Length: 218
Image 1 (tube, rainbow, N blue to C red):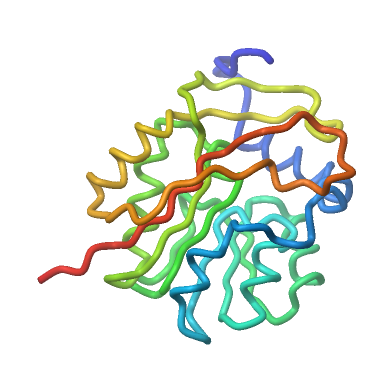
Image 2 (cartoon, helix red, strand yellow):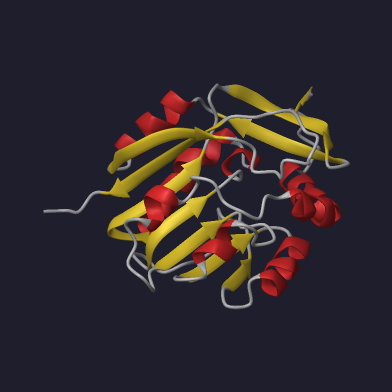
């Protein structure tokens, strides 16, 4: 790992281009059968709910699972990942865009999900990102997002499916406080793995999964 503190490096571009280059191997490594990632959410969503998947990647397995019963929109910064998502999940809509600049109508989704994506943005932008999630949700809408256990300064790693990748994160407790400031009610917290197929020889990971509800104004 190397500190990501070089002002001449376009780290956003590094993430985009990295996923473009590793899209095939990354998609192949994704687990097709879900565990408990979406259990709390799907138990509460009515059929046909509008769900936004931020950092949707190639659409498997999250968008694909949700699109079986719901109206799914995916957003991702990688052109190759979006191309694959449109092939993998033809009954969903996919937007090639940065989550921090995409324009979506206020209160237009019943749920927002974001798995293994938040940490690819500078952590200084994370609260603004979650504020965007809140704006896109209807009152009473749900948020399911993976975050990180510990604070880590921004860094890059070279062993991410053969490409260099960027990460930056706050701690789980920081994100819990962040949700409270943004008027979310935290419903459940758990931890899930890295989401790769059991045959993928990568070290085990643990990611906090926060499941929250946007408060309804009275």
